[in-house]
Length: 251
Image 1 (tube, rainbow, N blue to C red):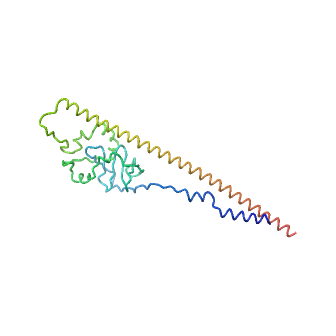
Image 2 (image 1 turned 90 degrees about the vertical axis):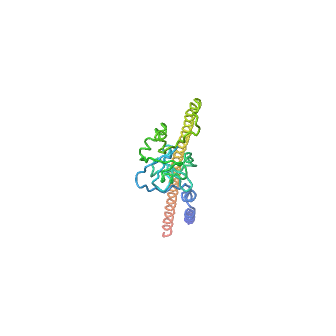
């Protein structure tokens, strides 16, 4: 009889105390950054390059979508996201991408009016496949400078001085422009390298988190199975004790 009372008390204690799995279910709460909603494109997007930059924009949707450095970019609710595809796979990007400071806030009005900095802007709409295939070569070869200065008529203002610049200045100007271009290329390359490293580190961290969670879940499941077996064994033992006691009483 004492064994029966002890077993009933132990069973009540097991039922009353939550298992580790249940406890972890209450405290294992992660805070994630929300992802932006999908963009409804009317069709495969065409892009337009912003004059005096190598930043491409999608003018046919109401939200800002950019292409730069091999990535698609979009702001949403005060945060920035980027993806390798224009319609899926958006991931959070910490901070503001450096290229955005060269994009005027009123570029849509300039696009609709075919005007840029007071000049006629005969922009070219380029299919996104062509941009994604050629953006790096175009930037390296300064394609849009050579292509009628981004389609902006008279973008380069004529010199106001009547006299020609000296030979030394003529030689220094292209060298300075070339050096500035190389410096900008190096900065952009470093930015891309940093972003790629951050992306790889984030993927490694997420992969490790998944492995740790799977390992914890497996340990919790094994622990719960072990406790369930011990409880069943105790119940079987108590049941056997009751039968033995009943047989003795019947005698």
